Image (cartoon, rainbow, N blue to C red; front, top):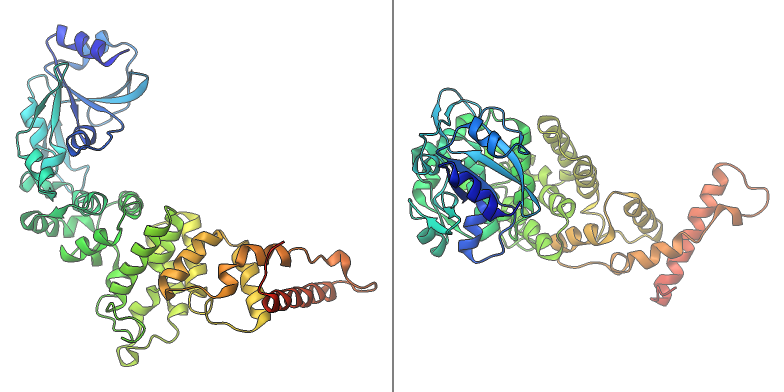
Length: 413
């Protein structure tokens, strides 16, 4: 069914039909919009299902239907208004009767740029709360005090600041801060979903800095908040404390790769510095071991994607020694360990380069070196060797291969 036919059927029955949400916002921003979400008003659910018998209901607390429009499965929701009756995002009483207006529906949304609607079929944009002006001024602004009724809206505002490069208004920061108590009780899945999207942003640091300014970082990510104020040797880290360094690393990794695994590894590589004893600063001896324990505790609190946990633990353990080891045997062991890890070479090297501003020769040439190391086979060991002896022989041969490559400085096959 074409969008024009969808709108025509509903309007013939007395309904109004709108495009809402991110599609309209991005259309106004001048970027290519993606998935379309629709909202209808002035019609009962029964009338809707008679007009569109093919629609599939998916909403629980209020009607949301899936309808194939222009070849895409799109969500169609009924205009609704809400009243706060409890805590969290489930603590609402919802009214979606046909008398609910588009103005009432848009007023319950979070920020002005997300409150835009486009009425179909004529394409007129409805802007009741100054969303277009805020987009033009690159500003994120809450519509009303109802913003903090769903505490995850605070995370969404911070995440969209990172995605779009927009600034959050002062009054919106105040409303974000008011979300602190309820935010601590939100399901981990909602927090993780926002973290995933924030890490996809061009500058993920904006997300975490925005949460810190609103007083929310310690609630959502106490592991990162603990880095604030942890001093570091100025000669190595002129950017500032351990939090500032972490933000620089995650942004640098993000500029190099779209990999969420690499970005998360960059985010957590120095977690151990958050528990460095004050008297030890600005040095952070042993922060690798502390960091492993902190990331495991984070995972226990908010189950992380498996590869994020594995990759994060690996980088925490190796990020200090990787660019500094000099013995051939240890370098060979590290190269083979990275090769077996869940991190690709571009991912691992992106974090090390961001942390140390350069790569040693063996990491820059790692894929070619590892190909040579893997050519050593236990099948070629001297006759009579068995069991552990074969493994020792293979490792010794691999060390010889590496030394020869180092001498030649030529890793070509």
